[in-house]
Image (cartoon, rainbow, N blue to C red; front, side, top):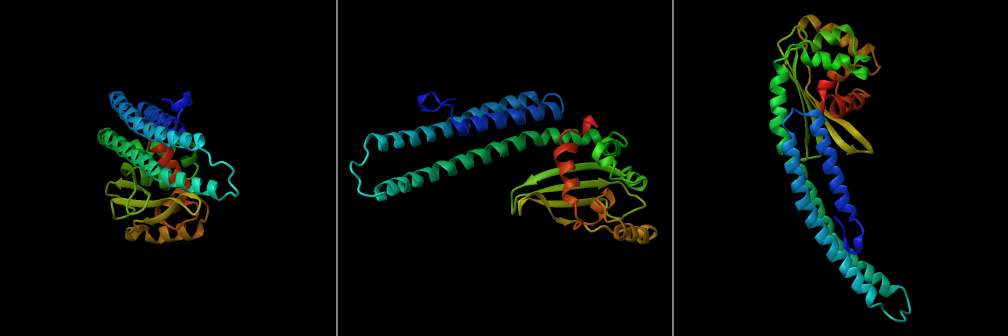
Length: 261
């Protein structure tokens, strides 16, 4: 896709690259058969890119008209500044249109992925000890867990990661467990804000863990006497320093393609 003059449109190129990268991720990380969905996504990308290029062509045409009819002998920079202000006003709806196009593409992509991810979840829940193998085989995660942490993960049945836009842009990690001897609630949710104060992930809130009576004292001792980054502190303390490091591993690595571990 090219803009006037044969120069590739930067926004069109960005959308095309993003679509190809997302398509590649889906083909590698999701269940077989999703290739058809990727093809549909690419077709949608082409449609949306055409809209963006059309807006860009109008913008370039407007700029060329301004260049063809310059103000002769301007005594100051004021006319040029006024022309820039006019162009900036013309750019604002174009930028807003591009943002809406990007949001629609992302929404369509999420909808297409949803069925495949639900299918994947159903399959992994039928594989005994699937997630404990994934966590302990990951080179970074395995270094952060004790044998007791690994025993806890034996009760884990499902992992889910969702990126949400409302009311704030955040990522939500949901861990599901069987009934176990460590804590009472079977679902633990941890929420992370995205792009806040210069960090990629910043912890927002977490499900408070209600430990069983036999483990409560030991949990308190472990949480207060081990300040290093480790899985137990990440799971039990939402304000723990370094929580974003573990969250990033789960969100960017374990969740997209757990099968490789």
